[in-house]
Length: 130
Image 1 (cartoon, rainbow, N blue to C red):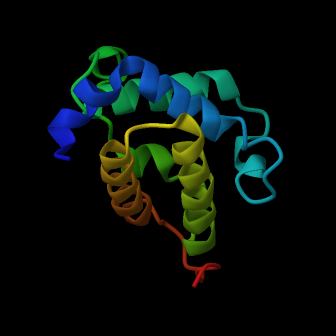
Image 2 (cartoon, rainbow, N blue to C red; image 1 turned 90 degrees about the vertical axis):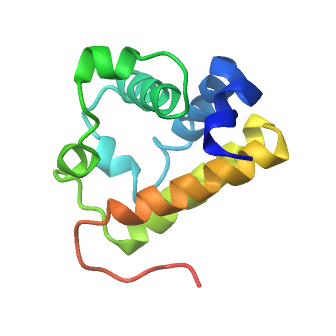
């Protein structure tokens, strides 16, 4: 599936399910949970959902409210090493399964998340997954 077809395949509801399934895992996670300590998880969930909607052809709320994504700048305060990236991908892979999206949309989103999460690594560290 091409990226431009994802929104029409899963709609806003699919992105809402995905992001909700992802953020439900955060509070109890020993690596990612502390990064969100004292932060509004509901707001983080809304921002990720709005970003994905914008990125894949849905509503433009993210751009209207926050402007250019500037992903590296926005994530720089968080210590993202390879282990944090790998854990983020583990949780997102679980969320993708739980969201029950069409298989081709799931594969396309997983590829996007793998590339983007690697791009956001901003600290040295080693991977925890083979």
